[in-house]
Image (cartoon, rainbow, N blue to C red; front, side):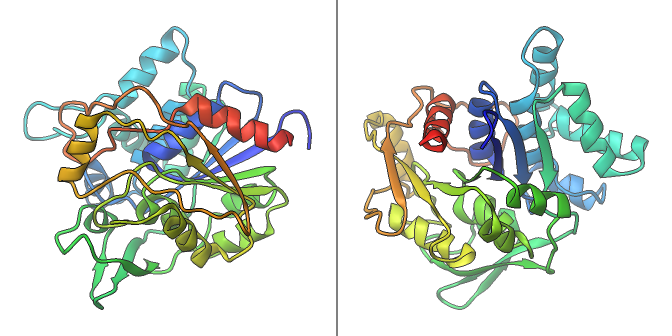
Length: 332
């Protein structure tokens, strides 16, 4: 491995944003392979009315990797700005609308993503996991099926039910650049993020599990901080890892990173309990992979922006603690 490792982060949403934010501070060749299955919030408009692949996860990665000095910081804030007045575009972000408009101007969404990265002067690459239009399909333990990332993420059914099978409907093929980046990486990071709608949403794309298994580098998984009603109700850390291995294969993970700081504020635990969520129990044995336990908890609590109607994580991993742990693991 060279002094500047190649690192690929596979996932989407807040978890990928956090990881990229931390790693950007260090010398590394960064690539984000981003889920294209999001169907909630403004992405529903992007998909249904503009006919484009969802852009929210791409936008978050753009912001994470963007230049933070002078005009760059202003552009970062602008891309995260969410309209919250009126009835037409309330809930939409400027960044999503910008990329939709640029796709029309450039003639393709692929070109729009590339040019947006240049405008924001991002430090790395952002690649869609697939260029095919698809939805997530989840089969639950009672036999019923739900189609659509948003419907899985914020269920109208009993959220205590476990998902027995996740797939892409219709089937989607991996973007060749994304698969190649994974195969050639020194480190492939899965998570953190909602297990089924962020992390495994990438892994169910044809060609991605194979690329992960063929990767020349280390493959690691970051366990979430909290369970999620509708996805991982009452899951332990081992339950999370077992589900990841179900889709990528046993013996593929080299290490699992799990938070050891359980000092969550009482009011936060109360709020999560109302959503049928709780801190994830660490029951990992490390028989097949190395378990790296450390304080990865951020001291900053997330506050939603006005106009944001989706459920968001209040407690999050600390980007800099994670980044140091990843690079320390690589050096060893």
